[in-house]
Length: 159
Image (cartoon, rainbow, N blue to C red):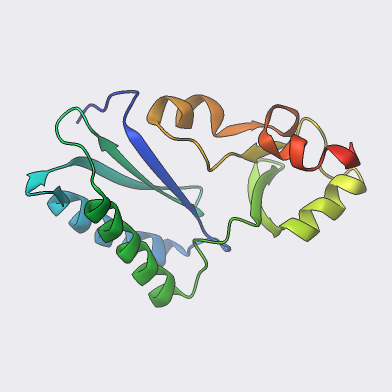
């Protein structure tokens, strides 16, 4: 399947890395969901993936059919079920993901702030902007240096 760069994306970040078994099970649940995902009876051109073992990413190409409030609600229900079943937090926007030596690390806002303060997180540290809205942004603005992200605005007083 080919998806338009303007396809909508939703990024859900886990507070811990999924095990390989969990990732496989979750991908099966996500595939079953996206294969039957509908908006007002219209099938959505959708896909789901897990990146780095931490990020569940849902993508919908709205050129075929647009998402609706009800269809978004059904995806949120699925993500909440995954949270419950695997004892992870996928909705805490105060958890911040970044890379250390190529590996993804997730910390609380407070711990991340400390790391910025003691210069463990530098302007070049790669952070994840989970607020991207579409596939083009996911590919170009999701993994960015701290200095080029919204994070640098929030923590500007520490730079």
